[in-house]
Image (cartoon, rainbow, N blue to C red; front, side, top):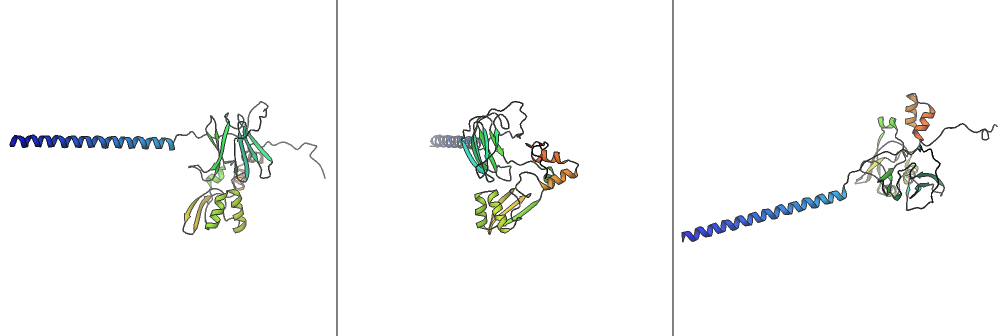
Length: 255
């Protein structure tokens, strides 16, 4: 009986070891499959990008030949209509007037523009006009000039909105912000640079700066003047595509 018991014990130990080994192998393969799946999902959702700044002022010495206005996508941003196509980005006023053309190969990279959208990037604080191109990646336009003074002296603010006002603000950026400012006072929502947090009473906005973030900054221009900058340098900084020139005699009418 003892040899049979020993044989049974050996067989039992061998079967147990095999089961444990097989279970460990299954667990290992499952964990490896989960890691590979997780890595594949992360690779689809996250990808490395190279962030570069674009200079919208053209330094081209060639005359530009206009291309047909063929549009592939459009979006409204800060109360204006933007259309894009192979030739560039077209900016229209709310009345339909053409305000500006950002040309591919001149102010924009040499790549056709394919799609437009408005959104806030992960490292941004306010909505931007996002432009997809065929060959040059994605472009983010906020049409704002960096203000060194405001970066050194940021104005922080915090506001609470009712659910009704928060719903209105979610429909648009600048238009609804100005409408709420007219209703509640011009300091109700000082600027477009903010993040929103839901609260029990509505929405809390935490932001910085004042104004719409476009054009000339009063604080920044005063700071540049205090540091010795002249009016021409200040205008070139805040309006980089503007050229200063004397008024022609034909327009210089005297009273």
